[in-house]
Image 1 (cartoon, rainbow over the protein chains, first blue to last red):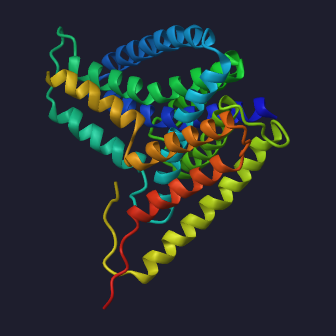
Image 2 (image 1 turned 90 degrees about the horizontal axis):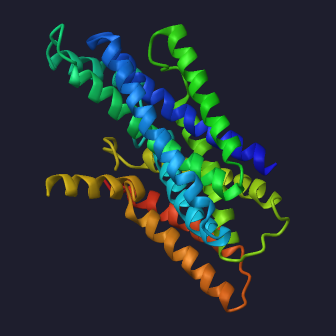
Length: 251
Length: 69
């Protein structure tokens, strides 16, 4: 059960980040040409591979209880950040991340940066694609490495991330447009739930707690946190109907 | 110096995010559970409660205030 949840969590997290990275790469490719876009993607993936390759083995030599305490804490913080944003968006207090708008924004910025000459390397296109892949991928790389190392299933976590990226790239090629129809906020809430649940479980285990039911406690944590998310979203929506002059984005 | 500041800001934003309270609540909760465990108390229920409370308070701070007309 724990392996299934780990696979789903890593897969969904990678799916969300891959959609965001793909949006940036497509905008660069359409406006600056596909060569700098692909070069930026290749460089970003290479740096990410180095990060995973270096961090993965390094984490396996740390005592498992200390690792779970630290990794559990970091996953908890990440998970709560995703949940907070997801709840604020679901309640209408924060703008939904619109991939079409992001695509248009990146396209305008790329066009405004001017034309690259035929012989010169297009550093603007390269840098934007590189940064997009690296920044979106860094959080996923961290989740892959920490999930994999804490569970002793780095291969499973890497497999889930690769599958997610392949799915998004195939869909991107098929539609040649940003994947705006992916219900990004729902996915983010699901990922936030899994990160928070695993983070709580591992941090507790790292501190020496004995969870009732062993691994089954993760499923209970997911269910409890899901109920809390629904309740908090309803609470915030209720606040919106009572208050006046609301709106604007919340940090 | 500017690059160093940008580097530090990137990691702060990456690890702490929009609301520092989330990170502070998680660290405090884990420390409390760890200390209690060392004292012989297996309070497994405490950490989920701290997590839910931290999230609730953080969202409460982001909630628009109810205005009286």
